[in-house]
Length: 201
Image 1 (tube, rainbow, N blue to C red):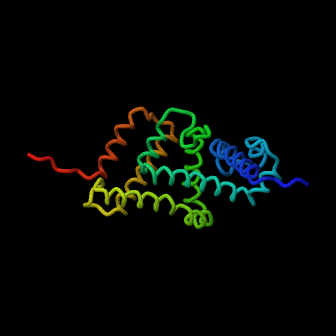
Image 2: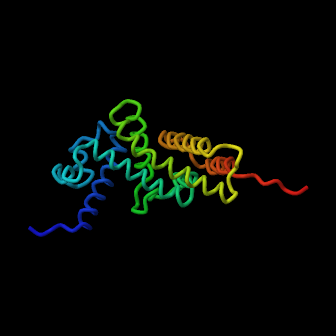
């Protein structure tokens, strides 16, 4: 039997994650049956669960994948940029591989729901959710060292403020509420955490 290359395995894993993302977004965790996952990914049950132990492991890997990409954006451009990208009216959203933002939002909301209702999932997710907070705080510390961040509020509080705004934005978009006028709101959020230099009289 020919040996399967790592590139092929990585591509197959990506195919499963991308298909599962749209499936979970459309049907929710409970509604994403194995049959629906097969249809969404174009792969058999055996192929899917060769890469992921079970449905929960698949969902957790998907949520972790999104968190990784968010953390990368935060490290480079800040958490407000993540929010801005959610508002951009284009099919690729956070993913350069043409993922629709609504799929990412669906996953994010499903994570929030399961955190409230599933203690075991909450324990598993806690190990992974810290990554975004760490990336945000590191970025804020760098901004403070460069003199661009207000210094009258602890970084931890600023980080919590930005994460709460993100959660509110995700809920707003997921409910299908208008988003055309939210850019000025994000300008205000960004301005709120910046250092305001006094101008000479």
